[in-house]
Image (cartoon, rainbow, N blue to C red):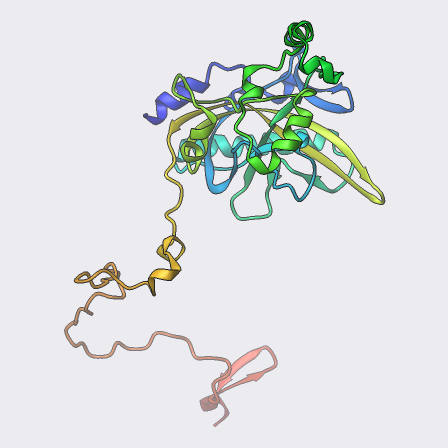
Length: 325
């Protein structure tokens, strides 16, 4: 896809970051215990639209998101990915505009000097962190079986089937076996929140998202929320970039895996392919030097150094040894 086509696909959204005076069109609004950036006119959540290059190998978009089982709880799992500036100069400028915009929004509501989770600006190239909850809390929990006889009674079976409203997405979600018991425990109170990824107009199923997004050029739709966090003596501002939509314009190829990592250790040491010796690419340092015709040494035009033994400093006047004689 051409760069102009990518820009055209974004520019008609009300909060495309390339629009002028975008800061004046938005406001922070309290929603529960959080604050959310809203559209001033329609009083709706604002979704910012801008181009990104998804950083290879820094995305967690599988069934568990970034949850590993070691920290936190399964119901709080989040998909997460790190986004960098695209290579194209025009798209790169748009990404930088998004970084500056989010920095401005943070400054409007921040309460501490510690801002976390949305922007990474400590490196040479800034990054934006985008995330989405893997599970959403149900408005009404699904009623469980209450009595053992419910499992054997025909009448109870009919009643139970009418009570069971677990949606198909949640029921068939490909949760890893080691987390199956915990998942079965929470799915009556939580439902699956699928990652909204599209390749052009096609919805991308979960099993394809990791390969597609790894290193992809994409159009990201992101809302922003803020929470003031107190943990004991610790105080910080938590900002979250919530994924609303990802449209992939150029699929990613990720980074090539080192042959040392792909190798089966039991097969012996890694050796270069037979008959294909390594030849480094030609560089200026590897080229044969070009001989130039000999020339007589040029006359020196440099001024004498103040540290030369033939120069002395007297007051504000510099004199040479010939002046003293």
